[in-house]
Amino acid sequence: MLQMTSLSAMRIFEAAARLGSFRAAAEELNLSPSAVSHAIVRLERDLGIALFERTTRQVSLTLQGQTLLAHASNAFEELRRGVELISSNKAQTLRVHCAPSFAAQVLSPKLPEFLKAHPGVEVRIAASTSYARFVDGLFDADIVYGEPLNREDLIIMPLAEEIVSPLCSPEVAERLRSPKDLFREPLIRSDLKRIQWLDWFELNNLGRPPAPSMSFDRSFLALSAAVNGLGIALESDVLARSELASGKLVRPFSGTGRDNRYIGHYVAYPKSGSQRRLARSFADWLTGVC
View: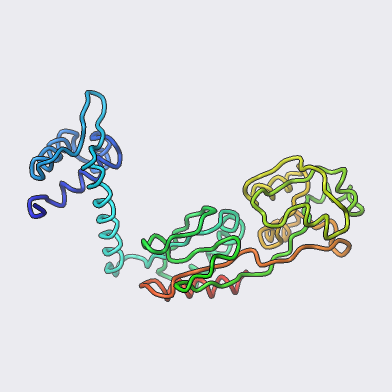
């Protein structure tokens, strides 16, 4: 059965099934819609099953088509990776998964240094708050917020200690004389932060903080709001390094208030695999610049 199906026909099927349209598949593959339709009809005839249910306006996968799509997608992804590995004229690719705010605030500004030190390496970054999956080879390294679970198959390295303190624009800071002034200023909350305003207020014997005036689900958004003078953010000096260095943000209670300190981010990579050495070089570089 397998000998009867051509690689080109399977590629056409995968595109049509993934896009849910013969016409869209034709555009992606630079073919005519008629060529796509004929190829799929021949594939269905060779396999002896219907892969699509057709109506006048759309096509949808049958159960057999859904099963074949899952395997075809995996097969073409594995083929792509294999071509990348053996193609000497292509850049060596490092796939990095990263916490969104760290990607925007720390990794992106520093990445040119790594690329300069490692010519011929291409870095691809995907950002989300979930942990990376290494079992399917989608990623080679993961920069996570919060210590990951202890896994024997991973090398886990802590990054820099972070100081979490109130940060605001210089204009807002002019109104602040002591931490008690925070009760009459708008506070900005970072929803996913492990250290919240309550932690900072308790550390400074201030009791419970007032309700935040606004909240964000990403630290880089909270920092942007603080830069624009919308209020005071409780954020990490590592994530705000660029804004602090440029003077866009200041620490109004530096030297007078007590700040929370913790290891917020970690880099992890598999102990084995073809990309282990490159991932280790990346992790060693990252721990040195953070």
